[in-house]
Image 1 (tube, helix red, strand yellow):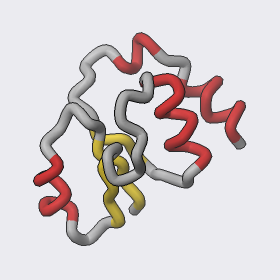
Image 2 (image 1 turned 60 degrees about the vertical axis):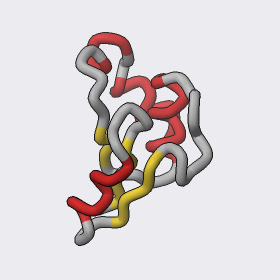
Image 3 (image 1 turned 135 degrees about the vertical axis):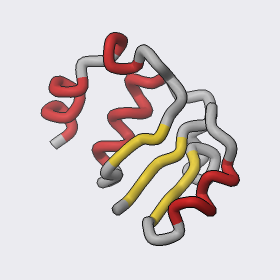
Image 4 (image 1 turned 180 degrees about the vertical axis):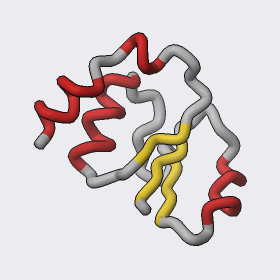
Length: 71
């Protein structure tokens, strides 16, 4: 599974997912990108999931629209 670790989580969490292909936002040089754009990058770069500490992300973004606009 290809995972993206958001910048609001410690990068050391990568060590907890060794069986997966995991990158941090910093690894991809996507620091400071707003959530909507980050989700578009996530889809267009074939990531399976975003690991984040953002609690209201599902209320701030239209995942269905972002996904279908990127494929």
